[in-house]
Image (cartoon, rainbow, N blue to C red; front, side, top):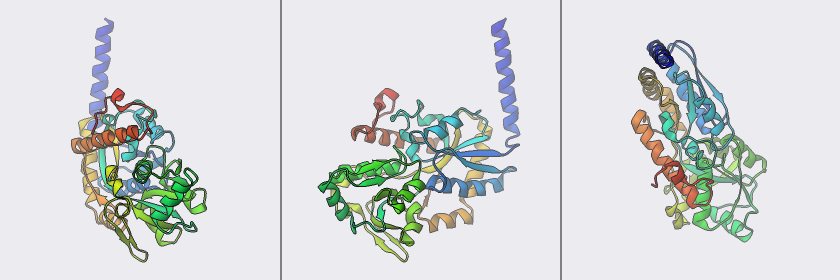
Length: 333
């Protein structure tokens, strides 16, 4: 009797979810960004959410829940909410290391992601720092290992991973100081709490243009030119060993629980793709050094699975992971 009653309740609940999915969305959606306000993930989500809601009958309200390990607080919160599409997660490739760093016990396959775009990382220093070139910085770090403080967003973020790769490729040791996102990490560099910062060019460009940070090098094979500033050289030009560890690319986006109804996924996918085609998003991407992706569903999931494998095993090989990726079922890249 209890079994029959249980099946009946489950059937009713499934029917209710299906009915709700058919009416989706009937109320405002909340997009919970796992990093702090003002960072790349936050800005990307706000820009795209604003355009998405033009193709939906409701608003998308963006809030921030930073903290934990690699965005684990925000992800844990969203994962605890119903799989109904009314609570989205604003994430980036940096969250894929949360599990190997002990932040939470889930892999990236619990999300149905939508990838917006990505921007290459740049290493910069406080405007008044004595380092004029990347070589100046590396030589100073080698002369006094661990004495130079560096910020790179949160522990396990792509920026932190790029900093670790830079140190591995140059044999220099910097003192990593974690912050809950790119914006506070950059502020720390501007105020002199740290001397070095690694975040994306999109996030730093205005600070570089305004003379608040001095860009030393791009952490990708090619250089970039900023109007009014000039060319930012590639770190690979001076340190060829970096090719063993870099480049590592961004994948900023949003997502919902993977077990959300198919109808919900389709509604959000349609709005997302239409948003990326708007002039507002295209202009923003072009002006801010972002390369639009637009991957959704299985294609986006495959991208995050690839990044999870790459990031988790890179951290493990660099001695910065608390948990063996193999124990979590994360395959080697």
